[in-house]
Length: 252
Image (cartoon, rainbow, N blue to C red; front, side, top):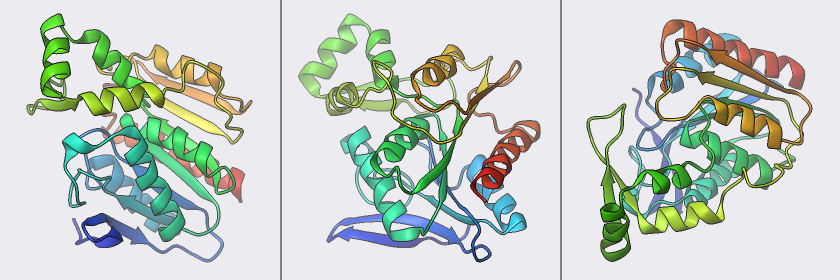
């Protein structure tokens, strides 16, 4: 993976990013990674290669506490990561943008689109996981509830990573304030949702809930029967790039 540049946000706050300049007038694509992932994952790199071929502008970056960016993961919240996405949009992109959000990045994608509606022309969610902190809280045991209240953090095992995820009381509380599925989502641009039905982290029905809440009339869901949470197989990546191409044509 190529060395990043850094978007400086303060004396000790900086976001690592890679940016690809496309042809004049081409739409831009911004990739938003998942929880405890980073800008160098399979989907991000495949999307960058595709954007290079197509001449699209492209940005991938690490949110605070992830990858090469500053900050501790344990201090991260949905509000902070949404602010990171808006900062990247404001400083690193120009004109029309398609946001691509993976898992937790799908929640950030929706919130960033609400915060910058004039900049966004389309959204592609990959196992998008709005409100996932409520799911985590519901799955914690009574002992873990007590631990997170008394210690401020609890370790949660992931189905897709050997490392446990440190889930903080701050993340849960902020996530509750950032929930989207409890009311209408005032987004009017085309949205494409890719969701594996074999996903053990995000139920495939979540995509249906997102579609139901979105104000946009142009929402398509692609259910991939044998797809898992990552959706990183060649056939999954082909579906992702096809969705981006479709929205790029709409934005042209």
